[in-house]
Structure formats: C-alpha cells, structure tokens
Length: 217
Image (cartoon, rainbow, N blue to C red):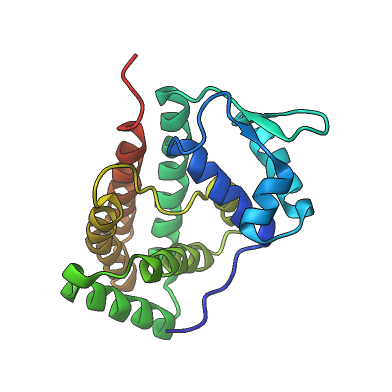
C-alpha cells in the first residue's frame, strides 16, 4: 500500500487528546500537564500548546496560566453534537467522492487491503487498521475536492471511535471493515446516495460507541 500521508503534528496531537477525552481516559477535573504530554508523545511543547488551544476553543478543556489545563465536564449532548456534525460532513464528503470519482489505483489498493482484513478478521492487526482507517478517510476527503470541507473534518478528527470494554478495538475494526468496504465500493461505482448512507451508518455507529460511556441523564 502507498505511504500514508501524515497529518500535521498539531492535528495528530489534538486528535489523540480529543479521543482520550471523549473516551473518558481523561475525566472531568483531571489536570493535563503540557510538559508531561509532550514527553509521552515524544514531541516538543509547542504543538501540544497549540493542541491545547484548539481543545479549549472546542470547550473540552480550560487552560490555566503556566499550569497546563483542566478537563471540562463532557456529557452525552456534547458527544452527540460533535458526531452529528461529523455525520453531516463525512457523508457529504463520501457523496462528493462518488460524484467526482477517486483515483483508480489508490481506490484499488485501499479496497484490496480492506478485503484482506475482511478475510482474516480473526487475526486483525489493530495498529495496521488504525493507519488504514486514516488513509481511507483522507482519500475520501481528497476525492471530495473541497478544501474547506477537508479543513473542517481535520478539526473534528478524533481517529477510531473504539469505546471501552473487552476486545472493544477488535469488535470496532471488524465492523468498520464492512462499513468501509460499503463506502468505498459505492464510491467506486459512482453511487452517490449509497456512499452517503454508508458513511452515515459508519459514523453513527462510532457515535454510539462513545455515547455508551456516558450515562443517560
């Protein structure tokens, strides 16, 4: 498979922290140390500081002068609002990708890799699928050919929405394999509405993974 186009460092760090907050790894009131996180991720403090600023603008954290940040209270409505926006934007990107067409060789390689995962679900390599997941979504954004749409999606990106529980990652990626195949085959065949619906189902299930970690009001 072709080399994965890496996301900018700020975007990658923001997505890692965003996902950790959504998933409850960082809970309301937890302190986030800029220095500690930079050390954990093996980066300088600058991109972490930039990520903190983005997360504060989203209402996920509150910055403290020279003391890092505090995680804000996140509830079901917050999660639903974020994922409903992703559903709108990602489904439109899939629609446009099917309308515009995707570069044949790239699409073929991604589908081939998806079929390999589908045929070997019992030995699915989670770390490899994380990279494939990113490559698929980026390929769709690129084929959509809308710069502003891509920018909005980058700002919402949180990586795989796995959820908690035993074997949660494996279960998520197994389901995602079939969902991604449905999206990519629809794009290949120019089926705009089917690509849109398939992406809505994919992001919708991811939302439910995250909502399952938040109690009903």
